[in-house]
Length: 434
Image (cartoon, rainbow, N blue to C red; front, side):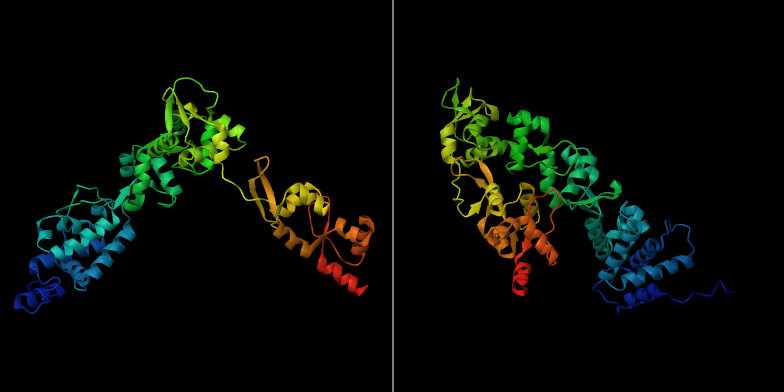
């Protein structure tokens, strides 16, 4: 007798009654019929509860799941979206059917076509969180633009091993350090340029053959920023983009003309660098900028070792450096303070002086200089023991012993350093007290 009593209507039944009577809101779910809403609620409840199949469930269990699903649907598309994202966070991105289960199966069939508002929300969530390839059909619509790459799809596009792709993208900051390579998702738009470079990548040995230069010269160009590897942080062999190499080679040979035999006035790049007292990279910068007009290409070859330039033109094209009268060399600094080179090197490491490198006007060699402004600033605060002894006309040993006896100690320096410095403020205070 109890089984014959009809159960009380649940929330889905109440919605169906209001839908049939014309009292339901037609803006969100009201555009679909009651049966479609009921089935959608059941399958969404199954996805939330982790039920993999609704085929053999009792009517009471289906009604309970329908209430769970309808509670989400009745709150609007934002609530549905939040629920789907929560399922993704709990179950990962291993696959849409594994995450959404029978709810995805229902939306992927004819039933999903009858409730497009719910189907569109699910489709947008999948596109924003899963790898869908262009041309794939997702919930009845073709995907025309890729939003995410998997590691394997990126490897297929570039022709590079997935492990190498992961290391390059990790070094570029496009993906976090991979722990599980199967769950890696790569945003397609930010990674597009890097993947394009990877698809045209060549190894170091191939780059050397392409440009026609030895490894040490390639490293010089790389240090000067004239060329950069795709994978600068890797521990193995560098990879370079072929397009970047082509642009560099074209820039080197932009003013080139064919020569059949060697000319005494034209020499290879490395010889021009030696005769002009500069580096390989500086000559290459002149060639790339077009400042060197006379460029010979031995037998028409467009390679680094076949390029011939005039060393006089290179020397004249080198940038004119400002005069260094307002600076001191390290040797001049040693004489000024009366200390050893190790002491000056220690003070430079500690940041007491401002050091820069520039080309000497006479020898045109690159040398290190210390600005006079930083030396004057240091001299206002510190005085060397040698200079202080000269001022007081006593020996440095006696002066050092006297100052230490009055509780004044020198600036701490490593034991291998010869020469001591004292604070002027401490020395002046002792003079006033005495």
